[in-house]
Length: 331
Image (tube, rainbow, N blue to C red):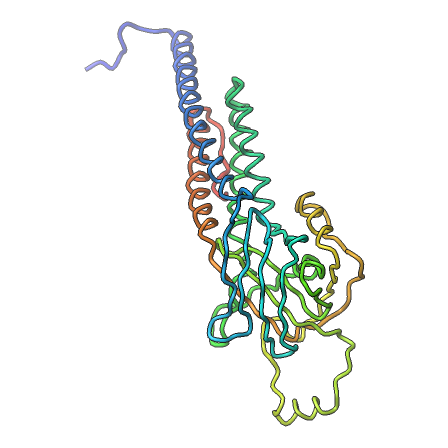
């Protein structure tokens, strides 16, 4: 049986036919992608709405389980903690009540960065949908969108170093300490009464939860009383063990919350503020972690994950038709 194609086509005609077929396929896939981007834009706007500063916000319980070291509530509106009260009974400090200063709301930097990523993504989608793009331009735009979605999801998931500390019997390796708190702790004037430099309050995100870190600090050169030395030696005084004990940190005591907000607005690449004090070498005497799940952030994480996978698939589909390499596997 003969395999000759009839009627016979010259190599030049075959190449021309292949080019025309490829152009039709490109035109079709670009049309499909643009339709999908319309739905993606609507989804991103829904995500942005979940972080909108709309009253009454989300009121979250901030209490330690199994003890009463920390008890209270905070209210998040948008990317800020606008009000709340925390009752503290730390082992190394006197009991105190911290009320959030309503005139100095506490900004949550990861949420501000998520808002910025979503805003940039929506603006880029508007440009993409309003203008006809070449396949190469569309491919580049999809790559930027993929990166913006990845950044937003990564900020919402948080740093592994913010996760719950391992228990003493845990076999897993201890992750390296996160030192963001040394320069980005909540400022003194964000509370009534103002907190002093012996207490660090740091708020961040981890797996769609609001994470509150409290650290009782003391200067490295602080004198140790003779009675304390004897108590430690004979065992009558017990040290509080945690993953940051006996490690010196350079801590910057922030006095003004406005300086932190301005730095967060500038973006992650800018240096953290030094609002009024120089870094001081300190030890962490006591460390307490409190987490509170935020339903709106959990919904946001689910939506972002779905949209992120969608944009990756669109870019991979376009790369196959274009014959280009797609390096989204790590995003």
